[in-house]
Amino acid sequence: MIRGKIVLADDDLNLTNSLKNILEAEKYSVEICNNGSSLNETIGKFNPDVVFLDIYYGEYNGIDLLKQLKYNHPEIPLIMITAHSDVSVAVEAMREGAEDFVVKPFDIDHLLAITERAIQRGRLQKKVTILQEELDEQRSQSGIIGNSDTIKNILTTAERLALSDNTTVLIEGESGTGKELLARYIYLNSPRSDKAFITLNCAAIPKELAESEFFGYERGAFTGAVEKMKKGKFELADGGIIFLDEIGELSLAMQVKLLRLLEEKRFYRLGGSHEISVDVRVMAATNRDLRREVEEGRFREDLYYRLNVAMLQIPPLRERRDDIPPLVYSFLKEFSDKFKKPVPDITPEAMQYLQRLSWKGNVRELRNTIERVILLNDDSLLQKEHFSFLIGEKKNEPVPEEKNGQHFVLEIPEEGIQMHEVVRDLIIKTLSITNGNQVQAAKVLGLSRSKLRYRMEQLGIKPERRSYSVTQ
Image (cartoon, rainbow, N blue to C red):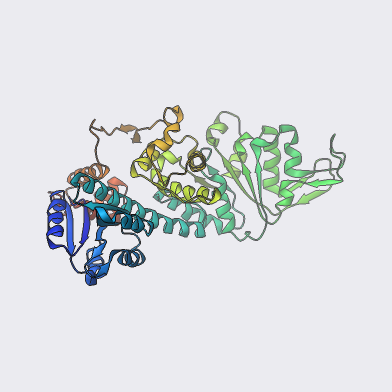
């Protein structure tokens, strides 16, 4: 498998030919460009992962070419080739955007090391750019971030529910999964978006104050009710939407009163004698299994069915790990902007580590983690070690995937393994099982066919039936 594509831009034929032989022996694909006038064209056709550029490139000034290339191809890392006497010029080149520099005569091990580092960094930057474009589009559309099919399906259903003017919606999911954010998304896309959106956290209200929070009160209704009158949350939400968060925490007595309000759209303020009518759409959320709460007598069955006209369930983050990278990049930007710092990159190893954690606190916990790391560090590249405070936290131990009641455990050799090798082997074995049927293989892997084909092309897997090999 080809490890990367490299352009050697130098007018020294002997040097470029020698370098080409060395790099090709290490499984890199190499294109030589000995003439500066054709460099842009060569890069455009070859689409390299990295470019080696001589500081003195025949009649061309390497610094000037560097600036031009950074403008035309900002995503491609550039490594400057220089002599010992020109190291100061190479440092200047790095200020202008060069990734690194190598000094003639070359230390081959050093050259190979910075080549691989530059390629990995360039690929990471491309991924960041693509994800950032997707994030910007998602923010403009929903404010909800995620690439998984699960999130996309939830948003599609939410858009349909938003079309209704008064359908009650129940949202279930663990704490921190984004239930309120989803409720706001429905609100913003609903006919009531120009009216109020009122949030009421049922778990945060003392039982003795719950009725007054829901329905308001008249002066003198109870000790401390010194105002002439106070509107409750349902009255404030008239014409709009009220979101009842943690509805499972509501007492049985308040459940009865809420049920009557939902059925009749009328209520009395506490201590009042005048019945008030409201036009409110209700959405509720809970981190409990309300069906089980009903079975165990802690939640009224009639209220459950009144709330559960339409149901949305948000899976925990550990069940939709594809959503973790876009969330991480979004939070990196959010907190870098907040703390006025440059947005750091994150290594593939660190991202893979974050994707393997269990995240009992879900998106909220991930967000808090990124906030802490950005606040306490000024590094431009986040490594796995930056998240060492998560190691040993029982709630965040890496967990195996579970499917159909059985755990899938990946055995990692002591010497380690490259991620692309794992993915390549998985795809080849899946294609072998499906006898080369890519549609079936994509279904088994939970991918679209186009994504599977992209991965096959990226990993050099030939689309042949019954036999699979890797292009050299």
